[in-house]
Length: 359
Image 1 (tube, one colour):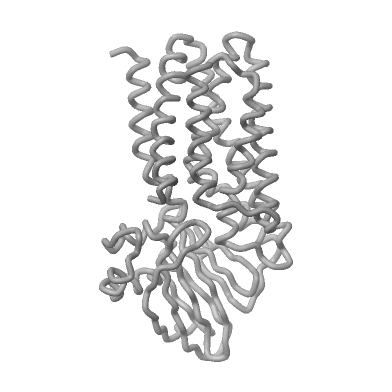
Image 2 (cartoon, rainbow, N blue to C red):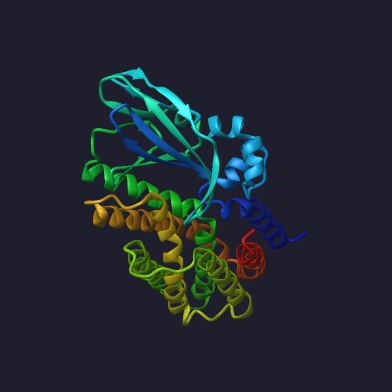
């Protein structure tokens, strides 16, 4: 078997492995809406339907009957690792019945937890984060502010509002994580970059670098515009439609790589146009997290900055092997422009069907 065929099969296998995860952006995220009363706080905890289904063995549609039958397992799992203390003393917890709720980023399993506490500052601790994967985090919304628990930052004192620096850092990290774990956005970007190898062979590395810069800049402008407009409530689109078009945009660009591998002209325009749609996808994350009152501009700016930093990292990592492969023209055309693009288009086509049908 030729090296180009081996490379293409390897890429296809990798894409097949990541395909199921790409539709579940919220799988490693737990959302907590916190309210503080005289006797103690009450929390509404939400986890994505697919993550819940995988954990407790029920369907991802979260049928009410199945939830009721599995309530004794679902409710404790949703709050697993969460502890509330007052003055360093653990509060007494009461759990409600789990239920299914719909959010901007899909379907969730939710449960209400109330706490009876003594005197002292109330603190939420997430012990589960210590052993979790790097992408897992708990997002706590409290009195218009948003706090992201993850890594070493595993606690939040509810009486202390988040500082601007904390908001900036939290949303910067959230932007990076969303781009890196948003495989559809990454594959779209890679599909746009594939043409750079052909340009490098025909017109030189310098011209290819300029083409990459134009494409990345156009994509950034596009998604930044709609991210801001959607996050501020100026424009709204149906999320299922947006996610379907995002998947279709990957098919379109990957297909262009196969049908017209030498057509670099117009790629920035394509990146700008589809970037406008991808921005609505990015905004769905902020719709779930919520922009903190008084820090909306800082949160929005830092989230978008996080996306851009992650995007530049993806480009920097991908450009080295692409440049090497481009120096082997036959290998590049067979393995990347044809094999890689067909593999990406195949995976994205599955997403189009899944998202259009709401699967």
